Length: 222
Image (cartoon, rainbow, N blue to C red; front, side):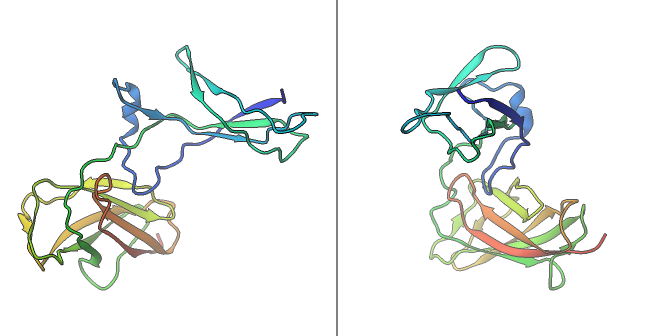
């Protein structure tokens, strides 16, 4: 077998708009629960190997508290640098995304991001930007707020997905052909670059995954 080297890699933020529990969920994974572990395998070079390399049956994970877990595997990475060892990059355990839920509504709604005041959204690194999302019901029947769906937000490129529950108990219903505005907030990360940053918003990310809206936040100097 070729030499093997293992490298620790940082955790990756969840892909927007996936909803992931907080890291505290890893303290005790309940029965039927799940956690994820990302591996980045590169450069597998077999010396003097004829034909196609045979993939391994599994990757064996040795747990910090003792014991092992064999994860099924059926592929091999290409040989890109024959003089260097094969590399296994291992990222930390992370909570698994929440499973899909029934859609909040079957009506196809529309969403737009609007400033609460002024003509643009702006804020400094570390600040919280307030804005409004207008939900419009183009259908012919009202959409009741029998439950308040989740909301996913992302300020790119430096931010990470944020998940909240829509503050809709007092809304009652979204009237047919009508619109309602909801106040929203997003944090400007400390590392956000100056200038325009992309603001992504999506309703019901674990269910109907929509509607969605896109705007921008101008990050000003500190």
